[in-house]
Length: 209
Image 1 (spheres, rainbow, N blue to C red):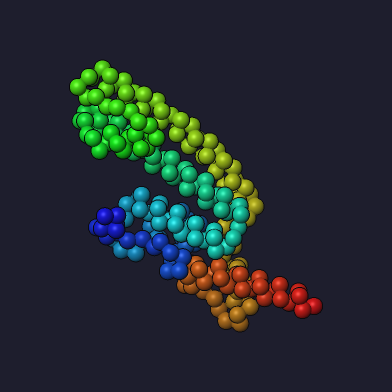
Image 2 (tube, one colour):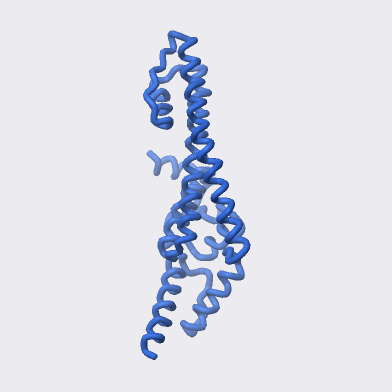
């Protein structure tokens, strides 16, 4: 069902083996998630999900521990944000209309086992208020993760934040090693793999000395 929905609204790059480095740079440097679009008009949720997949794969391919922490926090922030949105949407809908599937979804999101008795309006309203109160715990976690995330972002921006100059410099270094131009039309996977191979080449040179 998810793939059908994506086809109806649009398609995004979800693999660093297909995404070109130029599009990756546009996304990470300019925060332009629409650079991930292949066809159609993907939703914001689809774009963020695609970017998370790309980011995770890039972190694994590069093998940078700090960047993985950055991605982990980004994922947690995204999950908490979407969870809160879903909880609020369920509560607002249930205030007007009882729906068994929404009862189950709300309990699943909150990790609770509340009984919703729409016939007893006073008890029903109280249960929904308790659900809203429970969601504040998720909000607190979200605020904490955002504070941690902001600290990492600040560190990146003050030291080695990825920017266009960084990627251009690496491409020049890779080109010098390959003896021919390496352009940003290569895939993100190839970019990462070439860096690893260059590092292995340098390591071999050191061992041969």
